[in-house]
Length: 324
Image 1 (tube, helix red, strand yellow):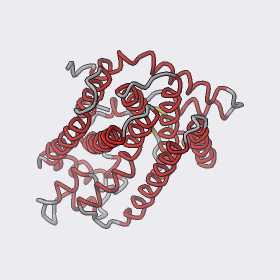
Image 2 (cartoon, rainbow, N blue to C red; image 1 turned 60 degrees about the vertical axis):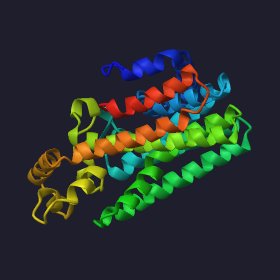
Image 3 (cartoon, one colour; image 1 turned 135 degrees about the vertical axis):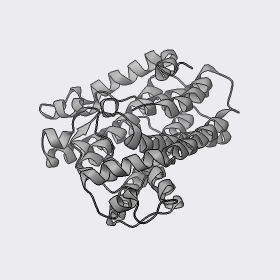
């Protein structure tokens, strides 16, 4: 696979489907009045559309197609956008995808309400599918995401999570939506129980791999590609996998230990990032992400041999090689 444009290779066969998703995203906010319309367009513009691709490819791998699949994909992307708006408020982030965050450009109150509006739009679009079982999955997903964010906020007191706690956090924070995207698409395509379970496992493992790579990029990425400064997770006191792996071998005087313990100076941040690079923690975290991606691929190898299934396999590779 060409590592310069891996997503283009995966997306090309479903380009018309993703364009249908873009049309639905535009229509979802097109009838709203200003300034709300401009706020929502600001949030929904950009992004890699990975979750929409998971919906489309998962559904097509079981023979699904058409407007309903695109509508589900759009609903998932809108839900994702809503969580980003709320995350940015909680984290007090000034930039997202290289642009001002919503609360930074307007106000915190307006941003929170815009996020709520997007959540409502996502629920509306899924409700219109007239599938109560799929709506129930969406409701469970929203619950899991909120629980994960609350736990992460409470862990901001400096307590160090174990490896098991870390994986539970990122499952709720990130992997739950990937898992549900694949699961709901499989249900919409009338998959068997075995097929639905296989795609659910695929989405879960893909989401875990995605978040671990995100943790690595927070330390080792380039600001111009990330659209935000490096080290944001460290600045917020988040216990990411590279940090946890590094601290397994670090002494009490280690800069990473000092930084997470409360010595939050710019100089100590630079030293902590240098230590994470030199200790091999980033490589170890990437290895774990690769393991999760392989488990995702294994979950769907038993599905029908189609171009869509190949797309799911390739998407797991893209997650590992992404730079932003």
